[in-house]
Amino acid sequence: MSEERASFGSKIGMILATAGGAVGLGNVWRFPYMAGQNGGAAFILIYIGCVLFLGISCMVSEFIIGRHGASNTARAYTQLAHGTPWKWVGYLGVLTGFMITGYYAVVSGWCLQYVYASIMGELHGDPQFVKSYFAAFSQDPVRPVFWTVVILLICHFVIIHGVRGGIEKASKLMMPTLFVLLLVIVVASCLLPGAGKGISFLFKPDFTKVDSGVFLGALGQSFYSLSIAMGCICTYASYFTRQTNLMKSAVQISLIDTMVAILAGLMIFPAAFSVGVNPDSGPSLIFITLPNVFNQAFAHMPVIGWMISLLFYVLLSLAALTSLMSLHEVSTSFFYEELHITRKKGAVVVTVSTALIGIFCSLSLGKMDFLS
Image: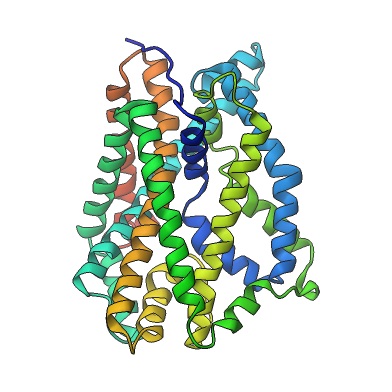
């Protein structure tokens, strides 16, 4: 059984939902590090250039395909392909989103665990303790799986309520909250003694570090950050109304995404440099380096340190969840439209199957490390 195609109910809801799909963990754990290591403001300028001249145009292209098709990504490309092999680009987008959902849910679940750990005060200790805490947790056969399932169920709850009642409504709540939390932590970080070194590390241009690899890294980060070619943009665009200005929307979404990435740098580097820590990237930055930074930077104000740690992981969980929702929706829309079933049944198919993928991904870090 199929159902009538839905649409976003408001412009702000559409912008926040689509921007939420773009804003994710990569904005926090990858962009700031890449900027700091590749020339600071020089990298940021190159990144902005990639967004302006390639990212936005690719986003608009996906908007056009999605809105014209008014269907899931695979069907939208099939309609335009007219029997040519280009239709498989759409199927590849769905498959990409589906596979990413599985492992992205694992890392998103880690964020929820660290929200819990922050509340319970489990992250206080010396650097070796924090490192061993993450190692023990990530290799545990139960807790990561539990949190993976929890965040997928939260995502599932949003998705089954549809575009307006689920995705749009949740995005209107989560995205403003994310921005408020981000600004609070940025202010707290930049007010720390010695924070200026971190700000300089991020924004001082060093063109001597710029080479072809930096350009390629900036291009890759821009595509990754904007969720290009993962089916998310195309799927959300299928819910756009005909009155939606695609170019203007793409610029606004790209601006929000870039602002979050830069603010994430202002959140991380001033605090890190205030205690003499040189941040790395990826999960180790989020789950090992930053807990140590918060412990040391706010050692004289433990309550403030506890609060900043909690707010940070709530922020991270929101960023992860908004991206996970968009990834989940890519596959959900495909299954319920192509199998002619209800949205709820399509969401169940995606939630269960990606949970299984997530469980294997999680266990591959511990008891079943032969899978990795």
